Image 1 (cartoon, rainbow, N blue to C red):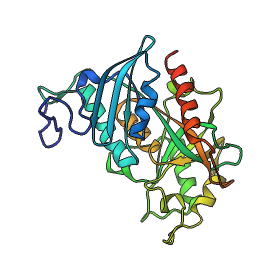
Image 2: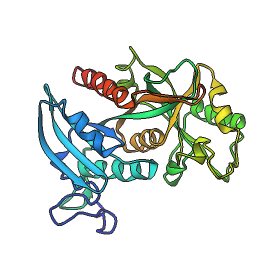
Image 3: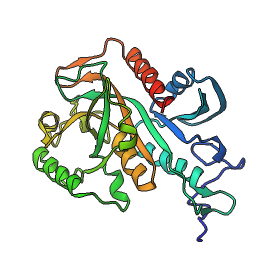
Image 4: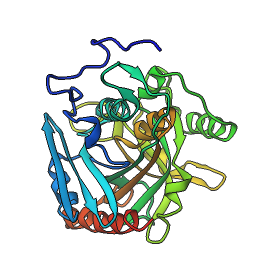
Length: 291
């Protein structure tokens, strides 16, 4: 099997992968993604034990146990570009032999669950509510750098989305990927389900205007109106489509859970966003530790 060169798979002096500074044995089969490095300890404080702590740049990871389940929680930072680093390096840790620099003959499939914050795009999904994303629809372009495809329904959703939003190909070529049905089925009670749109930025890409004009100023108004059969856009943020897209290509099972801290239709923001995310962490960990 072809050897992966040192410039492509970067391993540091202690044998850990470059950005995450993790060793292969540091990774549990179930991995929780959080954007904020400070949120890692807010998740791991609920573990019964923490056996490994790593930190490099914005990437902090703790691995431990909750009941009988071994878990890793890792901060990704903000945006799809960081997801590209985290997901590719996590996959390398579990599916590439670091000594021979070759891909393992038997591949491991991780369960990856994002616990993050998001903005609602529907009146009936209030601040402090929870969304489990049925799909990640990316207008960030990351997956377009990789060979990928869609099934017939996904292709139809994309075409309808492009027609409805009038998004220009010079700005984005949207892509879409579904959640892991095996994970999503556990997160029904207390969760809204729908399509999560992932943006490449927080201001212009999400329709915020400070001092700069927008090329598609009506995009934010068109997103809540989009439907395709039973599907609608429920929220938007900056990571889900990258997690779903790369995760599926690499053979991992992914789900994105979002605490709603803003409702862009109602123009409201959570009075206590920290409490909202803590409530989601507790609810999610209870479910994760039980299946």
